[in-house]
Image (cartoon, rainbow over all chains, first blue to last red; front, side):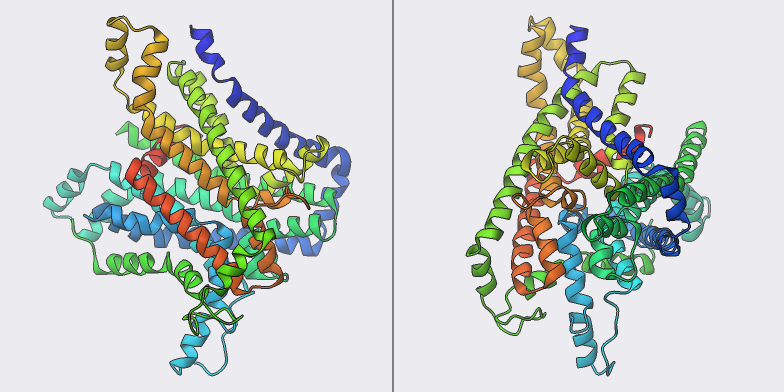
Length: 270
Length: 270
């Protein structure tokens, strides 16, 4: 019976193995075909270094914006009586394809887009503001795309909290801000960090949003990989960049994961 | 505890901004002229008729739908089997297995795309249905597994014990007690994986070929060349389809499932 039950896992094990082989093959292939020399070349290429740096700062800022904006919304949802209704407004855009949401921002931000037309009609500007095809547009787009992930993560940890702790803090004379700062926020940190690491990971590996909103000049690592494959046809370089992407994601996310584990331990110890 | 006015204002602004790009896309799709504008300069179904009259767009739509249905059914079956296999497994084994199932969530999509491309080219499967399907099965697995695992954990153990005491064979207890109680989890799992597969673009764009493409990837390619309102019309179809599925999840399972699986994910050690 017991062995039989574990056998049910076999099909899932096939998927896991296929994934592991694909990722393993990527790393292995980048060393056997391109060799270490390829990495040395890449890391001494000014263009690549600039792309790496841009990937890191855009991802970091996106994560920061997502957390700062998602928190008030999650708090609002956690306290709202009509949470289900509002959740539809958060979850529906979240599940619409990234390409469609990015397209929406192109229509909004373009030179003859909704925003510029509105601002001109109101007499606020004379010449259109150029936002599309700048890093600002990429930041706006990525923040919009990933915001719901963080909202749900924070909301889930807010809903787990014992509300009586906040009440206790208020009764004992804590102000609203003190209660938030000393009770609500620390207890919701696992959600904040979980959501933040997810966004950081996805932003570093994004392709569609930076490519459509950032244009060809301000590339991120994901868009650079895509161009290497489909315009330059340099599979070796693309592979090595993908491995670099894995390393960057790991380096960025690892401290957050450690912090999360430490906070969870500390809270379970209480 | 009440919320500060600033929190409320940010939350309400975001609840407007999150769906805004999508509303604008829907509005722009009714433009009678070949310009993307919101509000549209008139009203016509012109671009919808163009979509319905285009064999290329319809083929992409059909292929996306087939891939998504097959991926949803297959991953859900695999996920149910895996969840049953791990249900009574030792805690260590189970948490190791769950980490492996959720692993695709921990890798940047651009890197996953390249990894699959390299691996599928070796098997000579890239550019076709099977290759894209395999990638989608792996990407959907975490989303299919979590709702089922959450549902399974919520089932009262004494119900299966009662069935066994009353003389049910293990198989009967499974089909007559456990599976019916798993129905909400299975429904969520099917709908989730359908949405994930139907919307996926970042990984899929590496794997399509001249004969096989999916709708989001075609939309991407089309926007990259020329953004005309036909894309807005197709995007609107996608938006309404997704919103419909979200309402279906709400009716069948409740949107709470999104928060529950988040909690589950955080408790599983990463």
